Image (tube, rainbow, N blue to C red; front, side, top):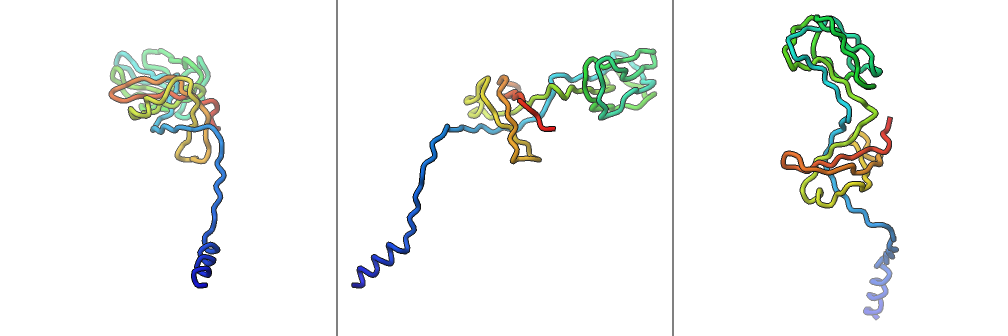
Length: 169
């Protein structure tokens, strides 16, 4: 009698968990750290000693192709080579600038891509055209669709260039 009671208690106390398998495609993930870059970056530099008389733009300002950027003490007016945003003006008007000093940086925000550094094992599983899901630290729950445009070695690591299908605002 005790044996039957023990068996009854054992059977009642065991919860059966029924698992229903889910049929779907297998997803293999490769993770890497990346930086957002632009295909069009313009860094205005001078080849000779120069000073800037006047800036016509400010950092953070959007500019049109052909818009005036700055004027040098030689009378040259430099214009924007493409549509973009001024991301850096590290110099001040009337400051003497040495050759190859960056005067201004302009970036086209309509041609952004993600440059991702991959470890060797992950790089071997990546190929051109693969779909990707991109997430950023500041909004991890939102996945941005993209695809692998190319993969190449660079300075002892592999770089995957990922194009965005649609960037968030």
